[in-house]
Each structure stands twice: as structure tokens, then as C-alpha cells.
Length: 232
Image (tube, rainbow, N blue to C red):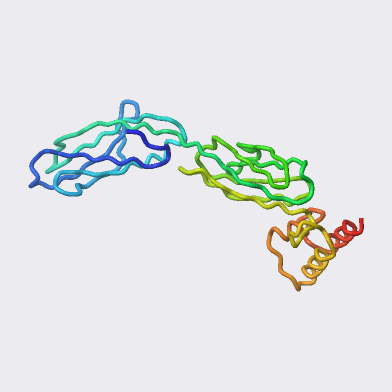
């Protein structure tokens, strides 16, 4: 039997015996020279047992593991059966289209980070105002995707790789282009001033776009810098 690593495998086991007794079954797997209990399984009907094996402890590697189902009745073990499950690693792709304004030659960097990592596990680079990207052979797990381009707001997404490929389209906005219309103008300056005065509410992306000096705050300094960007 084969199953995907971190997924589940199903099994059934039929005991040919006296069905007048009440049975239970214990599932174990072999670890070296010892057997480790996994679960207790009750019969669905008569003497047929169904069960599910969840091997989330294996990780995203290929591993063959020997399992044993033992039938217990009236205080004694009366039968057992061994079988092998080969767990296969899962690798999928993350792909989509990145749309941006401005330069169509500057690099766009797409990175995937595992939790708490300072370096990306996967990285690709594309260019263009409508650029297709694909990151192949991504191991199962949850990642933070970071998409960056010079003079643009860095976007972040949570990506979970399971048994299917993942599609994620992305829009990049120029720093200063608060209303995301593809240009930096007096309209953006008015929005920033309105936000500073408390008359306008911003999304997280709009805040990042209005934070011209990148200090984590949107204030008068950013308004002045934005004014300089507009006037040249």
C-alpha cells in the first residue's frame, strides 16, 4: 500500500472466527525490534475491521513502515496480520501571475520561507509588468511567500502546500501609489493627508504604500516626501 506522507492510509481486516464474541483490534507499527501502539479499532460489522492510519510524524520523506493489526477477544489475543505502507513525499508547485506598473525590466523576487526562517527555502526571479512565475518541487508544509520589487510595496501571503498545486496571483503597488492606479499623483497626497488627520482609513497595503521613508509610520514626513516625488 502507498500513501502520501503526512496524509492518511486506510485499511480493512477480516477475522474468520466466532462472531458471537465481542472483538476489539489494536493497530501497531514496527520501530526497530519493538512494536508501537497506534490506535484501537472496533469492528464495523461482524468481524470486519476498518481503520485509518495517520502518519503525520513521518514528515515529507519516503518511508516504508510495517504495521500489525491484532484481534483481542475475551481476554486474549486470537489473531494478527502484518502489512506494509510506503509513505511517499509530497512535492507541488506554486504559480501565478504578478501584475505591476512602472518598470517592466526590474527583477521581481518571489521567496518562500518556512516559519521562523531568515533565509528562503525557495526563490525565483521574473520580470515584466504581467509576469508569470512558477516555483516547482515545493515540499509539503506552510510557508510565508514574500514578493518584492525595487520601489514597490513588498507583499506577503501564507501558502500551504498539501496534495494539490497552489495558484496565487499577485498585484504589486508602487510606494506612494496609495490608490493603486499605477501613478503617483496629487490624489495620493490628498489620501495621505486625510489619513494623517484621521479622516481616511487605510488597509495594511495602503499604509505600506504611504510609508514613504519605511519607518513603519505614516506621518507628515511621508507627506512631504510624497510631495517631493510628485513635483520631481
